[in-house]
Image (cartoon, rainbow, N blue to C red; front, top):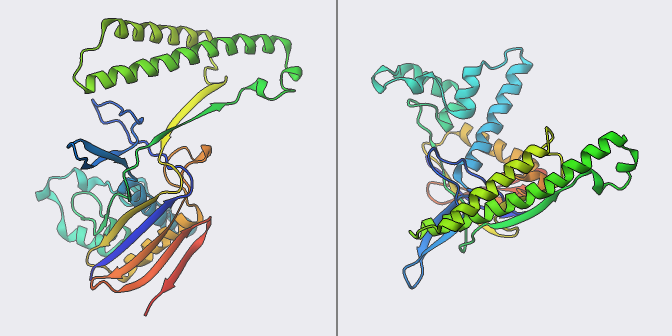
Length: 322
């Protein structure tokens, strides 16, 4: 039997995702927020949109159910070994390093039967995942936007300097001045790098004066950073991240092939954990990541079996249908 879960996730706050930079690659103009091409306009120009990667939701669910099993094992006095944690939480194990002909299929079949997490999510080369998760995309194309803030410093708290040792105050004031100069140089470096990246993307030559200005700005940035001494992150800093805005709806789907009853138990547990802590992605300390959503569970014939509502830091709201 196949289970299809049609899902809609709404961003309660901005949604910030930053994907790792591929080896030998470089960050995109959105600081590696995932962006895909979706459609073209009347002139044939590609249209782009930000999205929530499948790995973000899938990874949350897998970690949630694995942690549940780890806690139960620890309570029994049988904590997971490192290899088992990698296998269940990450999907990587010793079998992944073997050639296909060296894999013990019987052992893997037994492992699949004995372990509901590996059976559903898969592991290594031998245990294929039966859970497919799509990317979650907005109804209309939306690119990430920049959110800028300032990390506060000591002098933003009025009485702090009055209570400080005089020697430390002098050290603080000197470091603060150097940091202001470093911050300005850093902003210029980022601006010039973005301009050069856009030129290179268009296949245009980068003017020599612009390339030279970038090197000078980088040199100043390092000079002022060095003047700050050991506590280089302690003074006021402008911070920026990219995020999809709050209040947009993202649609996606989960599909379970050859579904078993225990599969739905795992998924429902994971969604309940997400509902009680409804935060995905990065920058959660700066107001990003809160979501809410509804997951409609259908059988292979398209009949609605249940709905699972998540969000608001409350347990998931489950409605069963006959």
